[in-house]
Image (cartoon, one colour):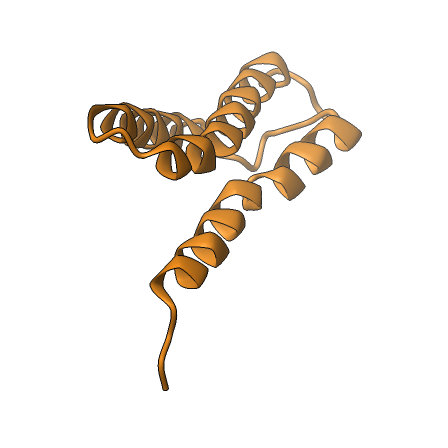
Length: 89
């Protein structure tokens, strides 16, 4: 089997870019985030921010772009967790 590295990278980037979207949507709909650890989106935000910096340092636009959506989603999820931390359902 001859796997194209570019195709593999595009699939991986797409999946990691949209991975947090369902959790963000669910949290927005239910307006509670008590079952989410605040550390998960915080650590992911830091990690993807570092990938963006790394991409800038090596001048790799696909790496930068692939990490913008997960950074936004995880930062939003962190904010929602803090916003809804005292809400009960």
